[in-house]
Length: 284
Ligand code: CAA
Image (cartoon, rainbow, N blue to C red; front, side, top):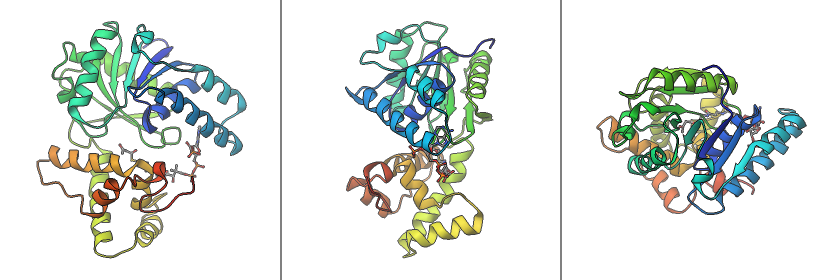
């Protein structure tokens, strides 16, 4: 790739979509934000603005970067407004059929040379691409939460992904200040395969009566992790974690093992930090 990506479309403006939009806009790209839910893209821009203000107060970003980022973020209500973009990043729900439907629509609504990225954290790129007419355009580009802070991006080739698509993705995320690592198209890729084991054991310990605070303190101090598994689940979102554990189990062809605490909290609408309560309670 000779020049950095000038414009992209982010489909799905939740935590991950918003974070990806933020890091791309921070280096001067125009980022269209689109979400199926009316008004969600505008709300995402507002969330990013609030987060940037906090980041500026902490000295992580300058006023210039904050202003440049906000200038580049364009919420749209109709995907057609972003027809000419170089890249589309999909960050919708972790469900194979949902992602497949999004990419079938994107194939029709974008130019043939547009790269299509999926930010899936678990689902096979080959499977997402299966109904596509041009699967060589699709690549897995997996960011980590919180996107502005996490340096790693896993780059995953499906069976039919072209080398050009891979190279564009790697060069782009490098330009955004990230470090790409090529990961295999296996369930969980690298990081989430390892994380899956940690989280399942943490949930099992919790059900055996060990408190979430004890688990987190033990992992932070005993393994030097920046945060423990229970607070990490709250940060990522318990609904997302549940989807990930189910998807990983399906991919590895073993029974789902989420325990009972996690499904109960999700059923009660306690999704972690974003809803104000999960294993911990948060001030809104
Ligand atoms: N530009 C813009 N914003 C920045 C920034 C930058 N350069 N640097 C930091 N920020 C923002 C953050 O986005 C965050 O914003 P909010 O106020 O909106 O929350 C805020 O500053 C917090 O950052 P701090 O650095 O002040 O916070 P901290 O020092 O307490 O560290 C942490 C918090 C980064 C989350 C740290 O505890 C950590 O690294 N935890 C582990 C995170 C982790 O493991 N993530 C992977 C999750 S798994 C995953 O994502 C995979 C999946 O598919 C499910």
